[in-house]
Length: 238
Image 1: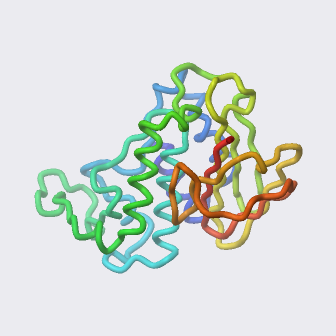
Image 2: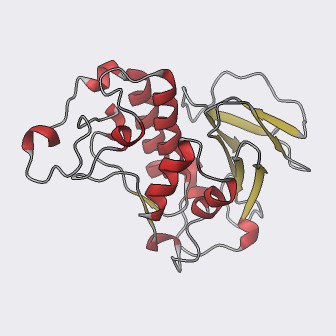
Image 3: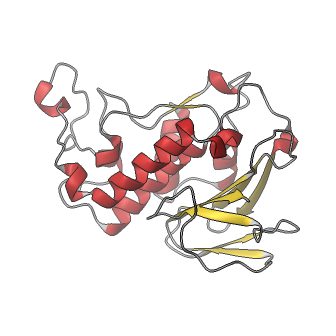
């Protein structure tokens, strides 16, 4: 439950960068190896995650959807086993209901929400497919506890934004992955030090996901990475 509660607070702007680093690397102090931690933010009988961050049940705002997608980006980027509640891709709501055990009407899926929230739905489905089956995502799927050098973190402690490089030590024969998260309502800035993204391909931002790459200006070697407000980005070493 600590993962669930932290992610809710984080996307609402109440979390901290160190906490996100802890959960991204697989909750090392409570799990001996990655498959011992199940990462989730909602389950079938509980209040939906969307209902916990907004009461705009039928008309999510731009910020609501950004926070919702950012939360699931954390689930799908964190080391461990991601647990996805049915209907998560539709931005499911139960109109604020908490315990819906034996409540068939509230537990029923409203498939029309996949149409009204089509952009979020397509993004989340693509990310879930990528995490579960793509060879390019192997750096996120670990069976044994990695060395500390497997991860390299970058933080903006003012905005609580985080960047993380998976397979930083090249200990696995798979592409490195870089993910960045900004939960604040302002631009954030990550100091990448000696790490450069110029040889990486961006495959996702908060609105688009394409594991072959999304249209993006070619990055020049830069020490500072600017992140838009309420944003996520995902990059793969090419």
